[in-house]
Image (cartoon, rainbow, N blue to C red; front, side):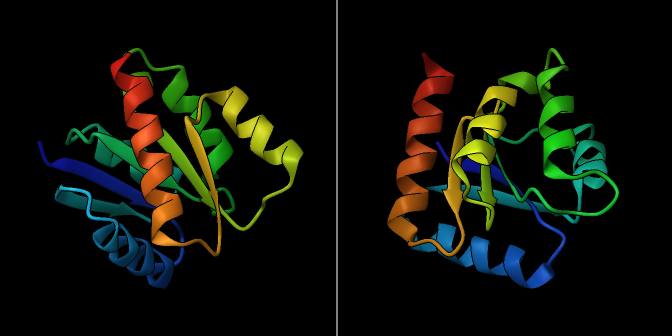
Length: 128
């Protein structure tokens, strides 16, 4: 079954790069949707269903931490796996985001295989 994936990052260039890397992973993707920050992403999630969210942390308006917290506090949205894709790779930040509800964490820059492995792990966890 094809995945519908949301990419949340304030950089259009990074969103395009992540989209390209996802294409290189061999994952079966149906549709992509994109948002420039957490507020935009929440609005979009109210209008369409996605199977997976890939989000940055450092964004204007609503950052990735606030976005993940909102998703985790919503009965419907908490079931959508979230993977953080960020340049902030400190152990404390990774642990903080996982504790908030993110199901995976990939540090930028990354290889397609690392992203694929994290997506597969997150989706397995969602189906358990």
